[in-house]
Amino acid sequence: MLPPPSTPRSTAVVAFTQAAFHYRVVCEDGAYVRAGLELSSRHLYTIGSQSTIEVLERCVNNQGLARLRTRDGWISEMLNPLSGQRGPIVELVPLQHPLKFRITFPDGALVRSGIELSSGVVGTIPAGQEIVVTEKRFSDTPSYRCVPRLKLADGLGWISMRINSPPPSDADVVELLGLACSREVDNYSTMFDGLVSVHGAGMLDGEGDESIHGYQDGGSPLDVTSGERRGSLSMDLSVSEPQPVGKNRHTRYEQQRHQQGQIADMSEKIRYALQPASAGIDEQSGTATSKGDQYERRRTKEDHSCLVCFSACRNATFVHGESGHIACCLECARVLKGRGDPCPVCRLPVDSVIQHFWA
Image (tube, rainbow, N blue to C red; front, side):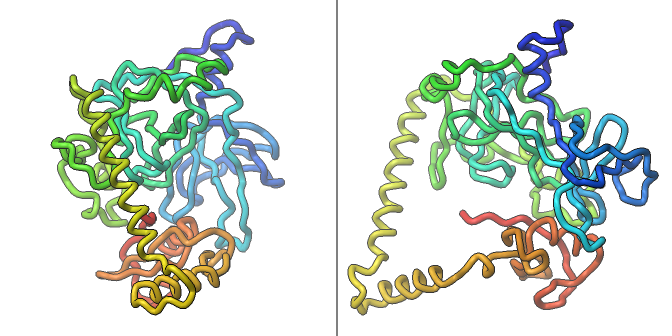
């Protein structure tokens, strides 16, 4: 990271401040700062409403609550639903200016389509490349230590600020250069095009996924259990950064872009072929698709909402044995799991809670 210079009003100071994660207290009662991660730890002091505080780390405690580490303690991100209250305590302050970073990790930076480490791989950015960032956030997983993520200005995807490994192996992936000017933001996609090795879904480029995002400990993230969250850090989606891009990256890039376009065209043709030509068509595939479309149109927001809070979307699965139920949002699911409650649908004991994504 760039050290803060002495001139208080310089652009470097603004950039350094923007690169840090700042949260604003929005709860009227303020934010309780405690000495430890758990709510049973000692209360140190209370931060007043509308105050801004720097956050160094985000993780989920044993009760399933997202906690934020400040310079002298821990605060909760949301109100504890077990207290009968709901709502945010603090909210992330968005970037006021786009920032410019340089990739410093020797193997480059892995670009994913979403903020979570389980989202699809888009490609890699080689070391030394400068990037422009318009948004920063913490991921929801791994829960023991959420990863700070950066969104590329051209909307291509997200990269990590540091390696997803326990300290001291969590090396920085990028270094801050300063504020990005409007010209750099406008021309970023043109400047960036051709320097990313795209690996679309279903592509066979001769290297394989292992060379891009293999697991650092050689194991599978499916081996992790909820009780091993803190004891086995490297088994919960510990994704390593990609291997260096080869000498023929530009040629390979164009070939992969062509393959990606072919796959997209094929997907569109399949989707079009499965649609009924008219409302009266009686083909088996057409009828099934038509009924499915009608069913989806009848589904309302309430059908997709969490069964506990009735406000957030269902994005978590209660896993029990070889089956599971999609019933809650990730926040509520973690709280229920932390409290030891059974699955709210079938009442079976919950082995783990996972966040799911539609491919």
